[in-house]
Length: 146
Length: 146
DNA sequence: CTACAACCTGTAGCGACTACAGGAGCAAGG
DNA sequence: CCTTGCTCCTGTAGTCGCTACAGGTTGTAG
Image (tube, rainbow over all chains, first blue to last red; front, side, top):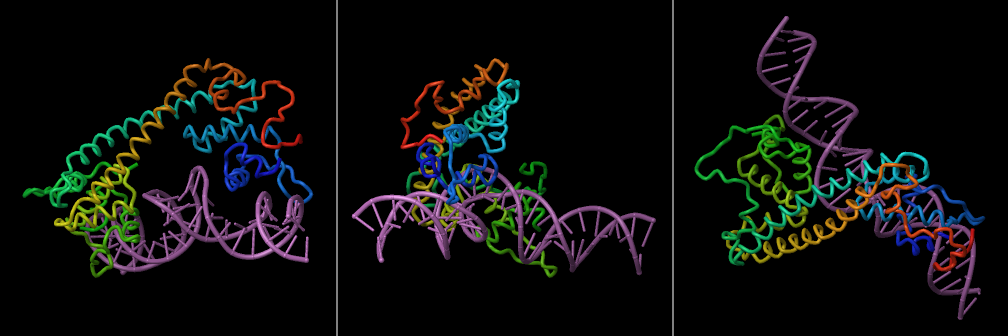
């Protein structure tokens, strides 16, 4: 099977397949005499694994670890479950954060009376706390973005 | 106020501030004789606006539009509410997607008995449909045996 | 024979930053 | 005076996970 077949079979873009090979997430495949890549069903399985993991939001370093584990059936799956646990927590916190955003955006949108910018809740809600008469230029430090 | 003060006041990284200037999201500030950038409270407000919008997930092109609108109080806020509406929809669909992931990940993690990789639900769940010891996997997209 | 598809390599671009090299300016302390 | 240390400067390159292109070769069908 050559790269186009693999691409169709797994739904992964050809360029992405070559990219995965370049960064070592997929092994270098055998080549035909004309230098074209040849893949086995095992390669397709591996790529399917990668694809599914990407869809679940795992990053490529994590996927590397999961792939390495997958090849050692007798190893403990401690690492795998830790990675999945971390991913789950990351997803949960993203959800929590997005729910807050959703709230704020929904409020913005629903309160916008579609009049002039000067009365627009969307714009207003984005503006930082205004120095309404009183200024606080003490530059309270502290939270630098991580 | 110079760039470090602005950074502390808004919580935006110094490098990011310069980046925003480079791409024209922040206007080029006045300079002191020693070439250092000087910012006004209005700049801080603008940057605060940008930061908040970024936190809400707006991309920089959208933010550019919102900033331009903000400066024209008499304009209609139609664009602003449309952008916010789109952002809201994007957030909603991201939430929906993440809830599905959360489900799948939670199932993975909870079913993992922390034994060997060969029995690990995490790894198993990521693998694509296996041919489970079946002979003749001829079904798929004109593949030839390797 | 010609057209076209599929493949090849290598490089550059995306978005939104972040990091670093290598230097300048300035205040305080010795 | 000189050093130390801080902030700032410019310019460039790296991050992540792709995606797109240029410019070439090979294979296949009509």
